[in-house]
Length: 357
Image 1 (spheres, rainbow, N blue to C red):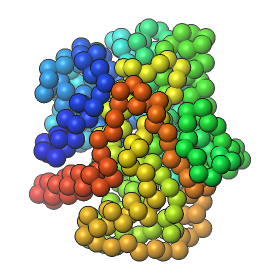
Image 2 (cartoon, rainbow, N blue to C red; image 1 turned 180 degrees about the vertical axis):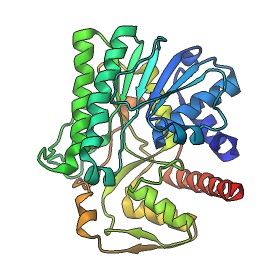
Image 3 (spheres, rainbow, N blue to C red; image 1 turned 60 degrees about the horizontal axis):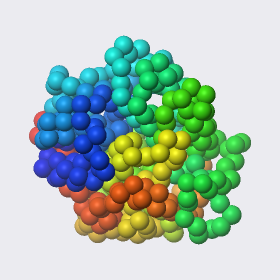
Image 4 (spheres, rainbow, N blue to C red; image 1 turned 90 degrees about the vertical axis):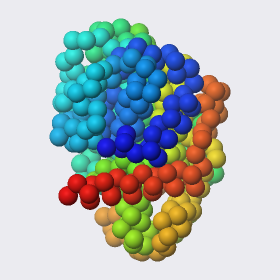
């Protein structure tokens, strides 16, 4: 339903124009896993939009485990020529006879509640899922395999206030269940480059920073998603801490244009941070901007022990985006602009849902 919104289409147009050498996507066959997630759904919509607006002639394949959810998310595109659904768990071998040009592996639960309640299921899309997709890529002679990792792979660096560059590698506690997500991402990255080294599968890694946008899951309990949901209900935006942690925040439209720029221009066996240098702020600053834009206010509450176990111990998580920028990419959304768009799109979507009831 999002594709029918003018504000959402504006984001898609901005993202499309932000892709360096986007004409190379013309006529390609592209598979996106995790297509109902925040990043995966925008990546999918961006290709569908480009097909409609610019006649790019791409064949877009999505892989999703929940067919009903996918049908609802892409209701306006189901049955459209050039759009195909594969409904299975990504941890199962990919049974697809048609050859592909690109695979973008975006599947996996990236929110703290999953890390605590389902750490095994958090790890398997990164480990088993990546393995099976790479085996398929090995058979069909893919042009490029892009793995969407995370800025969490950097762990904790000795320097407390240093930008994370792609060659940095900090401490992660392998015995902490909270490490299930970043550790699995690290392992998947190594699996990718190992497949290139041994089987000549061309791979590239994207490491998004803290990504936010309107198309969040109802299960997503990341701080940005919770801030958005409470603000839309007219309630106070709740901080579970003073919020002094510094983060790189990237609006989903910038994230998508960065990922496609890496897919088309990134060097094989390299990792690229996906972050916008004009959007670095503390969690409290993000919450305050959202609250002011939504015309509500912020409050701080004391978290319980379960909530504390979901937190990342990293206080300073700012990603250096120089390598991505050298490909010609530039972010378009400040935090203020991204939050305004997110609220506008989510409010319109909520109104549309209410009208259908």
